[in-house]
Amino acid sequence: MEREAKSRGGRPWSFDREKAVETAMRLFWRHGYEGVSVGDLTKAIGIAPPSLYAAFGSKAGLYGEVLDRYEENFGSFDVASVRSAASLAEAVRALMQGAVEAVTHPDRERGCMISSGMAACHPGHAPLARDAAARRNVMRERIAEALQPFAGPGVVDRLARHLAAVLQGISIQARDGATPAELQEIVEDVVSGVAARFPEGVG
Image (cartoon, rainbow, N blue to C red; front, side, top):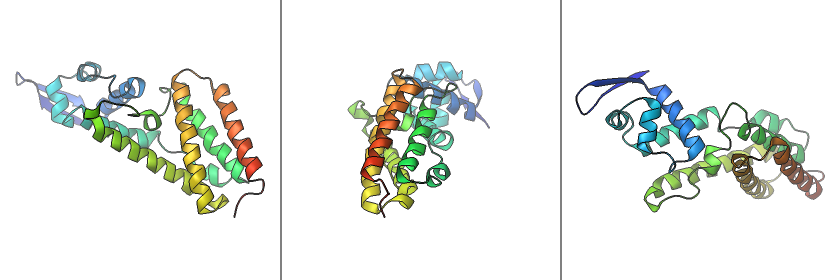
């Protein structure tokens, strides 16, 4: 879809909004919110600042759309593969292996925008930080929901919080250059711990 806005001089700008969000997503994914300026965005998208503000309201408004797009395309995991596992440990393996593949995919930026995004930011960006935290909470709830067939609520909720924390660490290590093999070692350690603690699952 194309969106038109006007520059300060009145000359109309025409750009593809979908492509603009995609371009911004790559920048924010690679550099984080505070590492990307309005100038960086307008240069990469090929528009003037007034066009960006006319289309998205603000840099923060564009970032919100970017996170929505990211969640749509990359922010979920394969619930079916988790639920088809034979045991709790294997379900955890399926979940974590999928995450490792996602954060080290050769055709994407490394890491997870939701897990790593806005973990630390300027106080003026507190609303964005709260939004990012809320999105992480939703991810944790989805993990718990996927593991429900294998354990009771108390175990699932605690395990989901633990796994969410580990996955945040995996995301950061992926951004720092850890290889898939190195991250897989973390997966195996977690799976071994789950298998030892819950050898027959928990009803």
